[in-house]
Amino acid sequence: MSKIALEKMELTCWGRMAARHLEQHQPKLLAKLKREGKVEEHLLQVQEETSSLYQSLLREGLQSPEARNQALRELIVLPDLGEYPEGQPDVEV
Image (cartoon, rainbow, N blue to C red; front, side, top):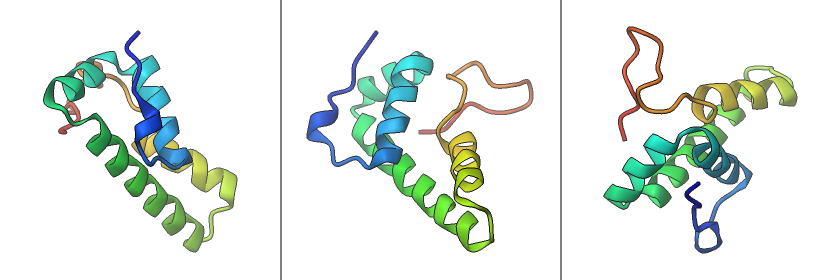
């Protein structure tokens, strides 16, 4: 399994969760990001978007556990490239 060098990145808990998920469940996407030199850029973007969504959901009245789970489902816990349900495109990076 390919490991991401996290020690050089400024990642929050969202970014670290995204990195772990990428390593464990999205090897094709990880390989693509590494080839393009975009791993850190991707993780920083995902952590920012996840944090923003989480805060927005809290403002809308969701409780913290529900907001956290929804943010994770929408932005971090995703299938690997080529594993999306029929009719849904792969992630653009």
